[in-house]
Image 1: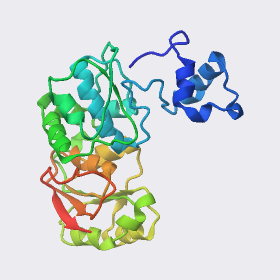
Image 2 (image 1 turned 90 degrees about the vertical axis):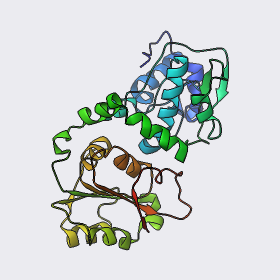
Image 3 (image 1 turned 45 degrees about the vertical axis):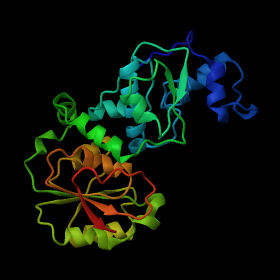
Image 4 (image 1 turned 60 degrees about the horizontal axis):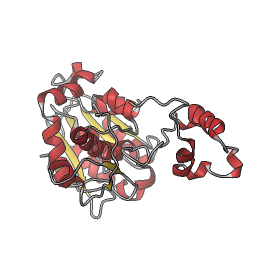
Length: 293
């Protein structure tokens, strides 16, 4: 990644991008005070330092940023872009190697859901910086196909496999993993019948469960009825562990999708069929099994 020093730190751009800092209450008013904030808070919060070639400016969470980061990654390879990625270290831990190049250019282009794949694939564009904003999420079925091909290239696939701290579990268990997304989407994902329809017919040795709301009655009912073991790990370690299980039951959303996407050796991956989902068309092109929610 690009190393930020006091000398190359542009404090005025930092405050302009992070507008919540640009007021009298924060007491940030010059380079010294802005640098202090960046060192002690901004770098930890992964705040953006530039609008160009930078995904830190996007407010999506880990699953969403996988798609956003991969768009920048492919364009960075194409143009050798000097860039920054939100959650760079987390994705590196997972085995996703995001490209950081050397150059910035005089021209800029805003990346949108409509043009990003054409920019990645086409030769018609000149070398340019790219600008990513919060209005675009890049969650299309065409991009999922593109990503699937990319991560099935042997070296890219092996990076994910070899970085998995639970890799000894691959192809050596008949375990089942359930991911229950509730939180702010509980009103969309609180149908216990979806999970029970699969659990009641699945044949597995051990069952595991992870959720953003593990104490919710829905989770507790599943835990009690099917003797599920709670997995309470970091986001990355949860993806690693879950993706080694032979049977996987996903919820809606991009974090759950990531679990399935990196489950290279799982026998069955199930996902909910949701009308008008809050995420893009990302589940249908991966030979997974759709189950009515």
